[in-house]
Structures are given as structure tokens and as C-alpha cells.
Image (spheres, rainbow, N blue to C red):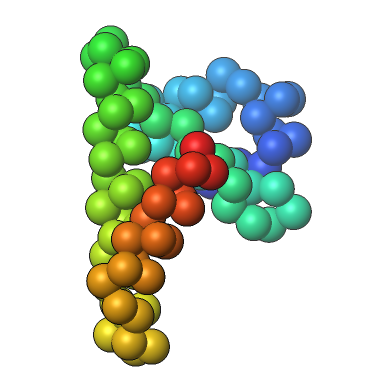
Length: 90
């Protein structure tokens, strides 16, 4: 996984974008913390790609909530409330 800093993004934009094309994505860090990703969509429909990424993020949220619920025994209603809260944040 290739990563660049926010400063790199502003001063070495072409290098960052070229790296995303080569690696399919790069991670942007701010003060050492990963905060953004740049993804090469190689001419694909950006709206479709955004929907796919959103679906994957939601699947990840559900998976994490299920794992947490096994550890702290969340009820189905509590899981649904967490999912609703995440959706409201968008």
C-alpha cells in the first residue's frame, strides 16, 4: 500500500496520481493518520464507482457491528439504531 502526506498531495500531485494509477489506490495521511484514499477508476463511471464504495463501506460497518454485538451482546434493535445513526451522518 502506497501512502503520501497531505503536503505531498499538494506539492507532488502528479506523482500521487501516477502512483494511484499504478497501485489502483493510494492513502493520504494527515499527521501520520490515514484520512483519505485516491482511487484509480480508469475511465469507469464515477457515480457507479462511488455507489460501489459506499456499499462496501456499509458492509464493513455491518460486519464490525456484528462482531461488536457478539462481544457486548447488542440486540437487533441496537444494531439497527447504529446503522441508522451511521446513515444519518452521511
